[in-house]
Length: 89
Image 1 (spheres, rainbow, N blue to C red):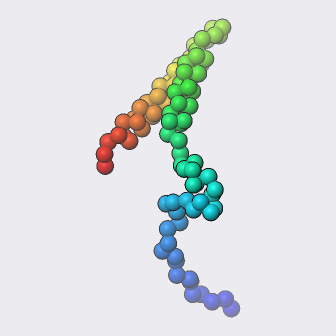
Image 2: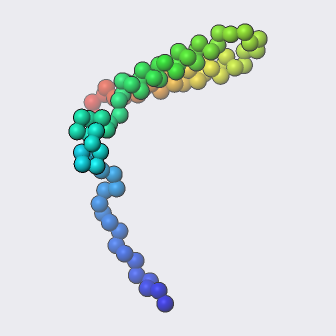
Image 3: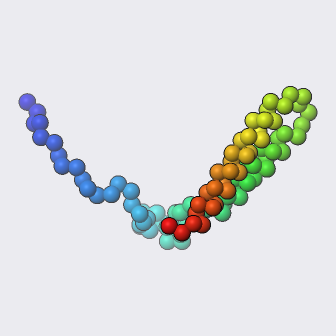
């Protein structure tokens, strides 16, 4: 019959806060983190691309509503993110 005792749970953190350069060689150059400027640039590029898709030879404007709403939602998310990251905590 199998034992009914359970092993104690580990109290160690599951996520490491720093990256070991031995495991990730690019960490020595600082390339392991997120590039906020790149994501911000890509986000604004997508907003402009979505708004650019409203120009065309389509006669219905239902897709224009979706494109404008998605571009507005993405722009709002990026603006709110930029403002909340500047507030000192």
